[in-house]
Image (cartoon, rainbow, N blue to C red; front, top):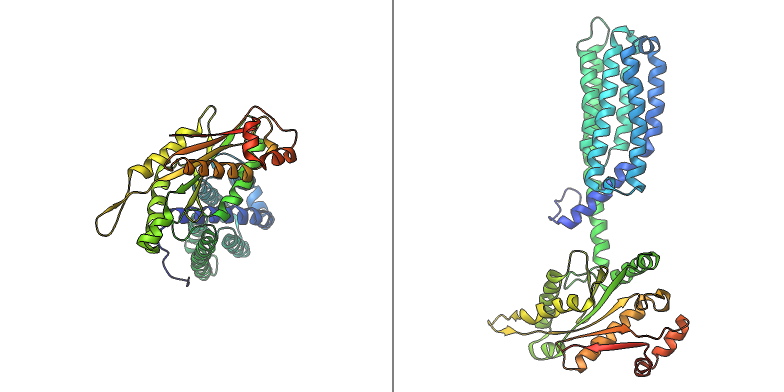
Length: 414
């Protein structure tokens, strides 16, 4: 992607970019806070009696330090804390509000102490403002809005102090210096923001391509494996008995479609079925193409929720909506679904990992095909509980015997 090119509209990509920019903004803002604190202390030292003899200015200066502390706390919560501050939009706007308060505080302090300043102090105050604005390009490169909110009060105060100066030398020259410097910073920050956004877009698109099936645009096996490692760990730590439904969906007689109508028609069928499955899945469900004509759905189960009705929704949707061919004919396409619950043994979740449970769902799916296709089959735990993971794996080597012994059972629907 070349700099300056417009990105194609993509709401999901835009949200990921916004999230990364918000994190950059908060992290860079946190790094810049010690520098701003040093500059505020330098400003207090430079202003001297002009600040400490003016009670109102001193209160505003103390408020400025309080805002600085609050911004540091905001950065900590936004980066590490739960709750509404984890939203990218809230992060961006809350940071912009903090930047506005900082700029406003600096502007008010400058205006209040101005009458008591000497010409040298006015020059030094202008230089302090330039230094603060320089820090702003580091802290706010990810948000032109925040930089604008920070810059405008300071620029307004400098305009007031310098353009309407009463008798001090060099006022207009200083105003020109500050205005030119600020304009240059504004141009740099806008360019840096655009380049950063485009670099993020390219990086996220590359990452997404590695985790997305190019034909159906669903998540791929690589994504699902990484997702399940994290999700399974959370389930094992869940003390309230959380569970996942693992569904293995296989399109019926798909090879016949490829052999009779060609691979282009087969690809169209895969895309058609993927769209139906995506539309049927709940917002919280994870849908991926496992390989070939196989799809996997991972669904978080509510307490007491059964898997069969969930799986049946996918079955009925594919059964009800055939694909329309180019010549106007309808091509029916059904599927067989096998499902299993993870953890497979709720009282002993460590006995079977998620890959083994998905393999049981795959076995159930093959039973559904053997029973006539276009139906469900579920693998559920029996009454026997093995002593260890090695024991259960040994028992599962002979699946028919494991079923007879009561380790599990596979039920096939009609």
